[in-house]
Image (cartoon, rainbow, N blue to C red):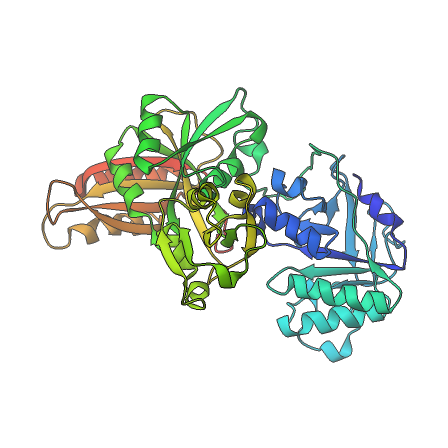
Length: 483
C-alpha cells in the first residue's frame, strides 16, 4: 500500500491517526488489531514495524515523532504535517491529503486561547482536553485527527465516530495492506529490535526454547527478535529444562524472562544463570504484559468460581480479582498453560488469566480484557545462547557476575570501579551462593561507553578486587525513554 491511498479520502470522512511511542514496538498482535478495530486507520511509528504491526491492517507511516514520514515501498520522504494541512515533500506548498489537520499530540498547553485548535505546534496535550478538542476539530471540518494513543484511545474514537455520524460523516478505515509488505525506516536511530538488525538477516532456520505453553508471553518475546517464517518456538515446562536444552544442543537459543516491571526480578532464572556458566546473554527484549480473563464463550462473570494463572499474573491482577470475592484464585505453572488446562477440562465455571494469544491458540474467549492492575506492565527477557555465539547487533550493555572477599567495604570497592571508569550501572542484584550459607554473588548490568577501553580497564581492575568474576554477556540493550 502506498501512502497516496489515503489521498482518496473525501471530506465526508474523518481519519484517525495514532501517534505512537517507541514502547509500542512491544505490543502484541491483539493490541495492534484492537487499535484498528477501535476506529484508527493509520499509525505514525518511530520504529521499524514488526510483523504484528504489519499484519494489523493499519496504514503505517514511519519516521521520527515530528516527521517526516516515508513511503513504505521506496523509502522516499513523502508525508509531513504542518500547521493546517498535510503535504508532500515534492510540493510543500500544496495541500496533499486535506485542508485541515488536527495534531492532538502537539496541542499547545500554553497560550491555547490564542491559537486555532489544529495544526502542528510545540507542547504536550492535556489528557483532559483530548476528547473535547477532537470533537471540536471534527465539528470544524478537520479530516485528519493525529491522536496520541493512551488509555482514552478507544473512548476518543467512539466519541468522534458518534459525532461524525451526526454531521453526516464517518470514520474512514484503510484497506488491509498486502501480506509481507516491507517498510523502510527513515529514522536516524532505528530500533535495535527490528528484524533487519538482528536475526532476519542471518540465513537458515532457528529453534528457540521458552518456558510455558503455546500463546505464552515468552513465545511472543521470541518473535520480537526472530522472523516467524524461519523460527520454531519450542515450549518447555520449566525454566531449567530450557537452560538444559540449550546446553545439550537440542535448541539454538533460549528466551527467558528475568524481570517484570511490577513484580521485580525472576530469581529462579538468575540462579540458573549462575549454574549454567557455559551460556551467555546475546540480546534483550521486552513484552507488554496485558492480562485477560479467558473462559468459555457466553459464560457470565457471575458464573465463574475458579480462576487459574501463574502466581505473578494473579498478583498483577489482584485489584480485578478482589472485586470478585467469590472467585477462588488458583496458582498454575504458566499463564498460557492455565488456558489450556481450563479448555481441556471443559468446566465452564473455570477461567484463566493470560494473553489474548493464548485465548486464540486454545480456542477460548476473552471474557474481560485488560484485567491487570497497572497497564504499564512490561517483562524483560534475555536471549541466551552458547558461549562463543556470533554477536547480533552492536553491544550497548554488559552483564557481569562476581562475589567479594569477606571483609568490610569489599562490595563498595567493586562498585567504585564502575564509577571511576564512567560506567552507568543499570542493575544490581544479589543472590545466595548455593552450598555456601550466607555468602552472596552479585549480578550487575552496565551500559557500555562509547570508548570500549573504559570497559576493558574496569574489567581489569575488577579482577583485582572481586572473586569469581564472569562476563555473562555483551549485547544490544533495550532502547528506553531514559536512554
